[in-house]
Image 1: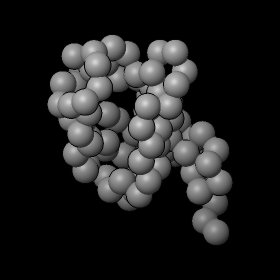
Image 2: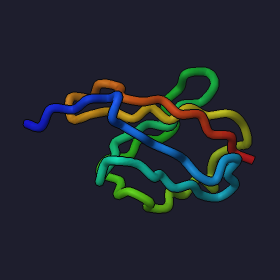
Image 3: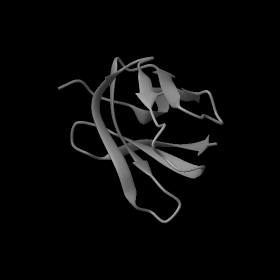
Length: 85
């Protein structure tokens, strides 16, 4: 297994605020992540999402969400905020 240093991880989410979709741009080729609402509930989970792939969020209500990125062991490696309008 490849050693992973979270300090080397760079992830950006765009656009933010988002309306119908967002994309991830970062240092990894693929991402596993969960979208969590402000109440801490898991709304959606994604696995193996390719860098810069468009993620459909048109079914989510407006508000602040958190995106928890996880590694192969399902440990959180990064958390980002996104506002959905």
